[in-house]
Length: 287
Image (cartoon, rainbow, N blue to C red; front, top):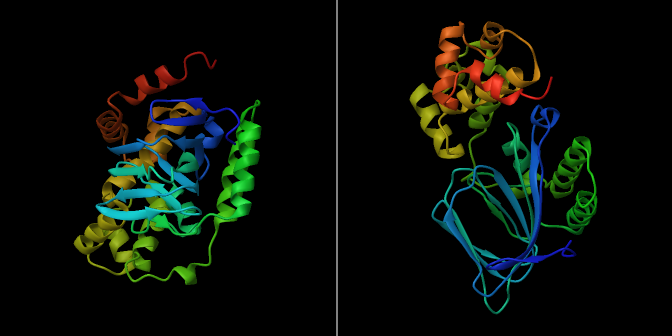
């Protein structure tokens, strides 16, 4: 780390961009980029949003982090996460400038991985969450990323880091955290989204009224359960469109739609193009 820094407008930065393979995108979560930076005195990011999850580790310096209208002080050893489509902002102290390492990732089980590290939508910052083992793994990942690296290697580093950051959940007991039934509902959606389930059936499964489930789910995860289920279906559909030769009608039924018409309509509304056009665009040159 910090061996190949390049000067940018408000920081010195080393960053590695990854092009996730189809195998990585079929996994629970996959890395998108890896970076390290040293802040200049005027370093100030945001307010802005990101399409991915970013996990950041503070190594040196001090600063301020704002997300979901809550403000957190940043100190050495702190761990904090930027959540997709949630406005965030962070900046350095001029006297003690921030030095951080970070990686961006995505995947249907990204939230579950973050929970292993003691983070979640209601807890995006963890004081003292970084440990020496995680930093050492990050350093090895930087060394590997400066050379040719396989998709399996990237996935391995991602999981090793979360394993190193894993905390005892009982130490993080917080009444503001999501009720267990919300997590159960989310897991139920992730397992059965392709089974033609309804949001009411998920609410019935966890034993609460549908409207209460929807409101609590949205408050906890920043997305409605209906949109989350659609996201799960569309992500799987895109993998099947680009990674298999299944007929469109087979894919429709595989991701929970009763017929090709309803699947095509939903897919075009979500992606802006028909399933057939999406397959044609993303499989060119693969034959």
